[in-house]
Length: 116
Length: 112
Image (cartoon, rainbow over all chains, first blue to last red):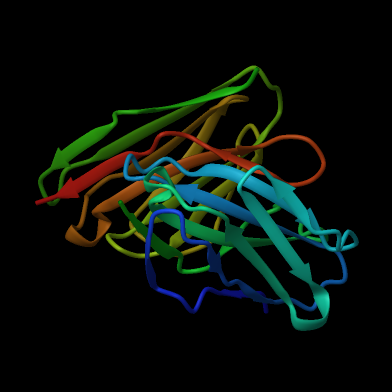
């Protein structure tokens, strides 16, 4: 069975602090995809990143960075110098390549509050 | 570029009334389409997905049904709404080979 765990229900930081959102996944598939989505107060899910299981390179995009470690089944997301606009719920998700539906298994989400 | 639309944006319906939510995608052909539901303060649950016209797979037995009458149209329906059907309904499409899903703006449904 596949499962995504985001143990941090809510995180509150002061603007300009760095913050890391944790994601741990479980899957028996050898090929899979991991995702992060952002859900601002408006509700729409915004795609942030996809990582393939065979590519363990970490990625940086501006103030965002992602650390993928297969050894610990983790795909953590770090925001550097957080801003108020980063306040949102962030979801980590998993999809198995062998599943023709490509359905996403979501974690329960982490609510990030960035205070000015 | 591809865009995905959902309507209505907000809906308040009495218990026992019917429901029809519509999702359409532009700028792509033969996408996989998905319906998710997010209950208040909760995560997202996949309800239905479709890999082609007339092909519907249900993930969770429930009071809802889905249909795909056209390649880029996905409809979520109910004959009689329950209080537990309240939530935020998101439609998504998948393009390409890597499985990335892109979401619509969602419909907030409140059943009273």
